[in-house]
Image (cartoon, rainbow over all chains, first blue to last red):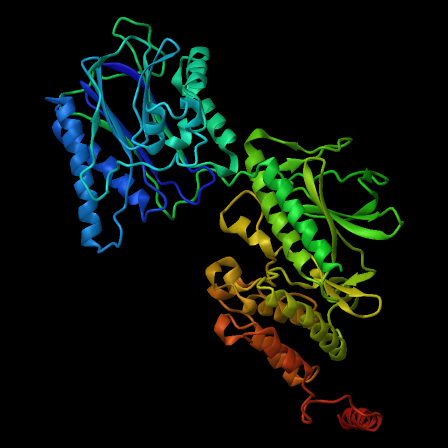
Length: 306
Length: 318
């Protein structure tokens, strides 16, 4: 198995990062996970953390080194992650259960299987086109499906954040499973939160990938773009991207080969955050923020000199 | 790499509506210029230019900031804004007055009222300490009016020292250089140099910054009064915490100054922040209090004559 993988999560202008991302692989199987803890509910980041951890741990337990049935795994792991969040809330007598979205993908035998709950997305991109894409469990998606609004209007719609299916909700979430999708050499899977897809059209993402097929170069650029476009109104934004490399295809120097791994070995990269951890980069001041600060000071001076 | 110094803007440079006249001071965080506005009134302009992050080379106006330092440079700008915000809120005869704030040359500028006089530091150097008690009481009582205003606005100055106390030609003091907001920089360990001044900074300046409070500025006031008398700051607080070699002012200068003033200095310089005056008002009350009758007064001519005669008498006996 050979692939390149890139994952990054940014806080954006929000007070904290409630997104959680991870990828983990054995010699024969790869899992990619993105969860977006819901703001507006208590401890969204806890729900996202439990979900990613739960799925990673289940994968490490069950993929030895392959999963018997990737779909059954996804369904079981995501549903159990939901129960685990409910347990957490019950044990601590939380007034409200923390909630999170989740999208996860298993690649095994060159076939991708994915599942999602909520509005975190997976794009399957082939030769500069979106080949497959998850359908958000959101009110606006229903509006799109029933032809009441256009796809392009989703990102700006006032109800865009309203989702009707998530982990931690009262009822057991409906886990939406994909079909089995065979991967070609150079195919890219992007799992992302709405902070990312909300700021970039699928077309733009495809164009950037055509321009620089190496995700290690393309993804940071897309993240910058998404962050810049969202500006101060932005959200946390996260991606886990993977480009599939055929055994015979030309590999990029950064790709990972699992051939040399043993049966019982796994490698995982879970990105999680602590409340107390300092931000990775010092709060960057944009030109706009500088102008605003200056304006504020000038106003105060004027007020005081009267 | 040795610390490099920034090249200031040239004299005569037109900075928006201000004409630079000369450099007043050049520090690690900023450069302060004397300039004149359109009405030819003098102003002091502070330019944000931390030399560890942004270097202006000879002949240039724009500083060069490396890509890697840009984020930190901008982050530090936040602290400069904090200073501007703090000052803009304050309007008091004993606090420096901010007049304008603007952005130019890829950095930011703070325009302040220019005051004529000299710093308390210069007074101390001129007299090698030994500043008269009356002068000390008057300067600090007025200065504390300003500091009270600072604290009332929920701000801390955090860098009170004789060099930041300006004594106008009319004898009234004005507190300058509001680096208060800079604490955020040092707290997060960025490349900007720490802003406290050894000797004048309290123990909580160094460690346990969550303990910072009015008593922190009060420690610095105590150290400043100490410097007025001793000619130098007391032992630095971080060293005092380790091994306290501070000799009480009462012991050192007893007899030359009133016990009450000396005890007040010792009170302010307590390492335990809870054992210092807890508010500016508490300190001010003491400074304003009439001297106790038993404290030494200036010797009358007769008594000093008697003293001299007695000495001579002893000598002749010997």
